[in-house]
Amino acid sequence: MTALENLFGPAWPAVWTLAKIVAIVAPLFLGVAYLTLAERKVIGYMQVRIGPNRVGPKGWLQPIADGLKLLFKEIIVPSGANKFLFILAPMLAIAPAMAAWAVVPFSPEVVLADVDAGLLYVMAITSMGVYGVIVAGWASNSKYAFLGSLRSAAQIVSYEIAMGFALVGVLLAAQSMNLTQIVNGQQGGGFWNWYFVPLFPMFLVYLIAGVAETNRAPFDVAEGESELVAGFHVEYSGMAFAVFFLAEYANMILVATMTAIMFLGGWLPPFNVVPFTWVPSFIWLAAKVAFVLFLFLWFRATFPRYRYDQIMRLGWKVFIPVTLVWLMVVAGWMLTPAWVW
Amino acid sequence: MSFKVFIFYFFSVVLLLAAVRVITARNPVHSALFLVLAFFTAAGLWMLLEAEFLAISLVLVYVGAVMVLFLFVVMMLDINLEELRQGFWDYLPHGLIVGGLMVVEMAMVLGARYTEAGWADLGEQVSNTKALGQVLYTQYVYPFELAAVLLLIAIVAAIALTLRRRKDTKYQNPAKQVQVKRGDRVRLVSMPAEKAKKGE
Image (cartoon, rainbow over all chains, first blue to last red; front, top):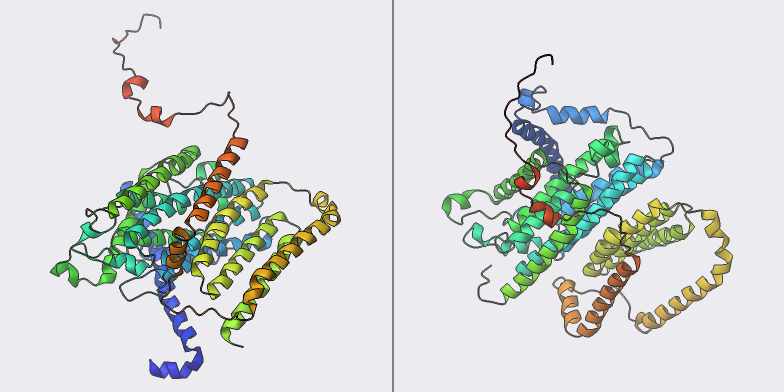
């Protein structure tokens, strides 16, 4: 390590940070690739099919083949489209999906930036992801794409409020916005010390709002293939489309990770006794993220798409009041000795 | 020139260029997007001053919510730019007066501290979320609550002014919908099998 440090001299901190970023983003993309395969397999089995099994042993190379196919396809810019914004939109979608990972802790010590306002940072960065969708819909010069982007803008802004209130509950319970400290605040005997117990309504709201934020079924009206063909990305092809795809799945993994960190105890084992504490902390986090991701896929296979006005009703008239009331309950609860978290 | 100073000038240049483009761009959607860029760069500058709470809330509130709705409206408008441009020279003096006043006011506020201005070095351990919260809810609690009430009134007023309930629209009552039992919708009728008549 010191030899490398001497080699790069004053540029070393930048090089080292860059190496750490690559160490986060590369596995993330691998995770995205195999999440698409997992999705097709899981939904396949839920619908009594087998799913992709042709490319490579048992279909393991399917995502690689898909990626290569999309890479070599032509990107068609529709006539009358705003070319600059058309190309910029996928980048606007994927940049926040990756930038948010800067503050995510993977185990007690492993985090790129251990900042105090981590929770706030994640909220701010993920709230920018909607620009990719809006700009794509507008720049495409297509009615379907435009309608999809309008729907998405209204939906994401609505659910962000409920999501934000759910997070306020977490920071109230943890008394910190630092993600590492939030996980440490859930330490104790086992899973009953995690925040999903006292904050159960907020856990549900966060999870469901997370599905809506990532435009996943049953809240995928921005795509709505039965009404809008493919919604905001109807005009995109090749790699430009693939980048939207990557952003959606990266956001799914991000929401799953945030759920695991804030409500499911992050890297903490479910029982603080010997066979469970032997397992490395990263494995526990990965297992919890995988569980939440499985829920995402399960939702998609199970629920029909919500009607648009019902989505809005759920966000504004159900989730926001629920979180507001529970915030008061938690704040009062914390003043009593009955608060043991 | 230290790296921090370089970042400051870089952000400042981007901010100023974006701000100029907001008012010079021909397309209103471009203007709105440049405004987003301006907000984001301003947040970067605040981050440089270690005011991370303000910087992040600027991004969260203005970039993440206000500008999304703004863009939402601007995208749907069919604005005739020529008409808008006609009034430019008439409005310019007013704009200059207001702008000039704001510059003078800011200069008066900042002027006193200008001589000792430098990089704010708050040290590692100060969480300015906590600091801000403590001040807001103790020393400035009444102004803060008043501002909140004012905002609430504004929200209620905006809704009251624009809400027109049409009499002929049909809407659903989900509370009633979920109470529906099977018996309210489906009736099972037991019918004896009919025999076909001759000739049919």
